[in-house]
Image 1 (cartoon, one colour):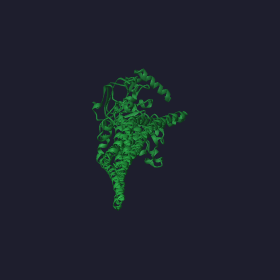
Image 2 (cartoon, rainbow, N blue to C red):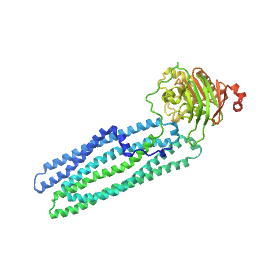
Image 3 (cartoon, helix red, strand yellow):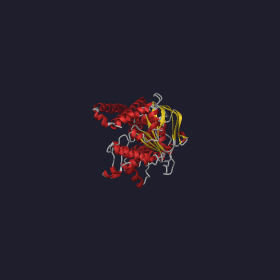
Image 4 (cartoon, one colour):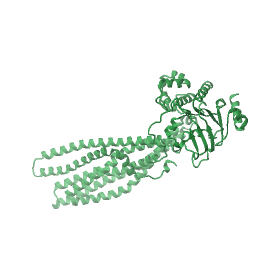
Length: 585
């Protein structure tokens, strides 16, 4: 199930309230200040009417001018404070959303990540969460304060002259009908625009993740076209949303202008008949102008909500992806005296997706505590999948996997993985310093332990050559290190965890003969005190194993030592002969 296929969740307004609830006091304070700004502005037309009356009756206007000046200054100061409080609250909402989403994405099941694009997930945690800022400070608050100010203005207009109010409301009602038809179009366009941003992020991540391959294949123009297409689609949809937003805003402006002209005509006639005086007409016209701000605020809030609703839905889609249970605290790593782990597979069947063929067809084997077990077999036999199942990146469809006689399903994930050291086939290295990468799995390792592992994995010479030693940056995905150096870093990282079970997936494939021989000796030494599982194709690694599990087409066809299997299993004999030929033995 892809992100686009997730089921419909709760409405966007309920999701928004969930993000806002922890900050409701600050939000209410900012909204109150904004409302106070609007209410102080409502007093200005009344002061203006008094000023005109004073002028008409040759009275002193000093008091009215001072009152008007004080209101203007107070309005500006309260308004600035309200804006600051609201924007700070909005930034806090974005921060909380990014924290919760990033924590959740780190707990995603590997199977869920396999079915999604990392670039699209990045867009959801960056651009989509950014939209929460506007939808919090402009939409939610704007709808509340703008709506209340609008109601208060209409009440004041009714007190000044009910007839002119009726004329104004008739014009505004017509504009509201038009805006109601426009709002859903803004929502659809905004959602498509954000979706296109996700597609562009996925395309960019795809290219940067294999940039050397793209360049070597001369495929820059093809990939550039894909990036440009996604960017242009986002532009088209964003322009479409902007078009409808502009139409909504201009409808409001047009309504105010029509209302002003109508009020001026009707009010002028009422002044001529003596129904109202000039001061009342001026005050009412000021209120018509004052309607512009709250009306545009409400319309902008509706338009902004449509954009934010699309982002909220995309964030919620990511939060509905299958994830592992949250870890309350990191499990303690094994102590040097802890016994090695025993592992067993019992009739395990597994496939990566319901529409894909089975990778394991009833795999069964036992690995006793301590010693080295090698897994061999042709490509696609299911060897690496064994390690993925042991780490519980995936769960078997049927059968059982046990560690120390206890089903993996009964282990807390953090405790299970704390007992395991895993070196992946491609030995990934993270951007950062060499020290950061080595201590990734055990940040508490002391300098003596680190120095010992560096010597064991023959990384001490590399550290001595680097300009800043362990604090040297290794580049994006370890590009400043060779393939063999990255493998040794991955092995050192696993050894620093003092694992009870060590999983090595082709851990020496990129090492030269000297370093491979040294690492083989290291692994053999580690196997005396822990349980080591190795996926290997080199005969030199296989022959030193205490037992060998031969896999073919998702099944275990034989288990034994090298000497036993060469004579007992034709497939192993063929693989061994091929390795002998490949190594010149």
